[in-house]
Every structure is written in structure tokens, then in C-alpha cells.
Length: 97
Image (cartoon, rainbow, N blue to C red; front, side, top):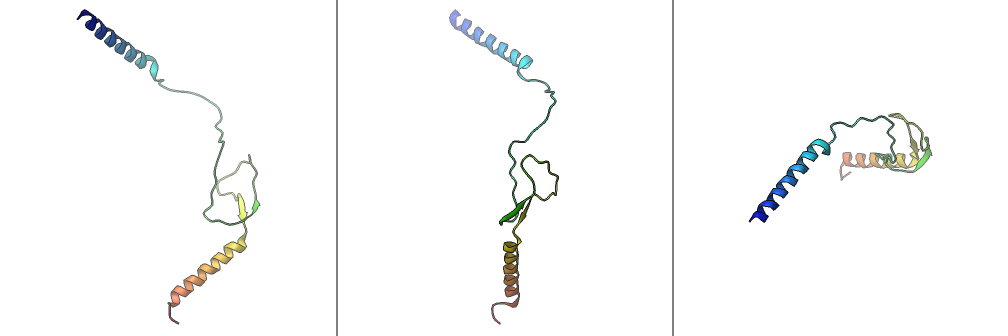
């Protein structure tokens, strides 16, 4: 019986010790630092697809919002536009002529 009480007392004391240590040292209050943040990988996507004719920036260049990064081959885009216009006109006229 005394052995069980001793084991319980040791477990409770260890629990209190761990809780006190975590409260004092476990979580830093605030981390202050200075330096530079660098991005390693940035994925750039486009709302449209197509062949790229010219890349206007190089890796490592600084860019600004709204800056043109690439130009697309407009022939494919113009063909797709004409196809869309033809489909819209067809829908406006209806199925029967």
C-alpha cells in the first residue's frame, strides 16, 4: 500500500514539475528579429493560355504590380475571338434561318 502511495506521489510531483517548467520556459512570449525575407519559388499563372512570344523579365529581376511579364502570340487569341463572335452571332440568329 505504501508503495502505491509513493508511486502516485512521484507521478503527481513529476506532473507538477513538468507543468511548472512548461509555464516558465515552454512558450516564448515574443520573437524579435531583423533581416530580409526572400521568396524561393513563385508560380505565376495566366487567365488565358497560348504560345508565349516574348519573355520581358529574367529570373531575379524586380517587378511591380501590373508590369507585363510575357507577351502571347495574338494569332491564336484572335482566332479564338473570331470563333466566339461567330458562335454568338449564330445563337442570336437562332437555329433556323
